[in-house]
Amino acid sequence: MPSIPADTRKQMAAYLQQLAARINEKGYAIPFIPADPRTGEPSLAYTVGLHVHRGYELAVSGLDYEMSCSALNSLAVRLLEQQTPPTPDMEVRGAVGGGYPLRLRQAGSALPFVLVRTIYRRNPPVWQAVWPDREGRFPGDAACTLSTGAQLPL
Image 1 (tube, rainbow, N blue to C red):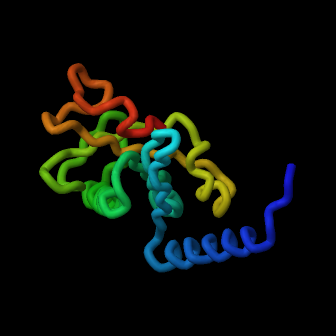
Image 2: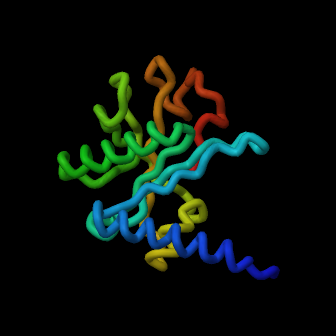
Image 3: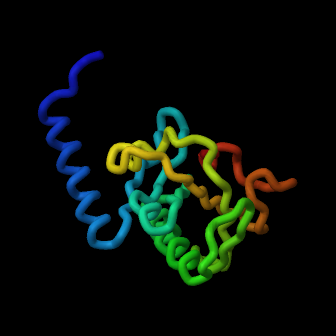
């Protein structure tokens, strides 16, 4: 296995320090991985640190940076206000603009959430928020018009 260049290690350490500072300030941070135009893989954003107080992390895929952060921040607040832990197929209204709800499903793999493992050395449950098409149909629903690659199934 090749070694990691020193400048890359420094950049990674600085980024982890920024995340830790944000977690200390807000209780969680949101890293964002942009879409990959070469592979067509959609973007991914997720919380890091939320599980310390809530027992779970949140994730969203296929949105731009601003929408991803807004959706995850709003979703965290809505779940706290409702005093309800996430459950499969739970719909949360008011977390994104346009009046669209988000539907929660538990991520099947911890692999995409490397920063949670890096910082905390554990794999808490992660709930993915999926968004509907313009008619309110979610991925997996009959007649959903979103392309299969619009959101990464986690």
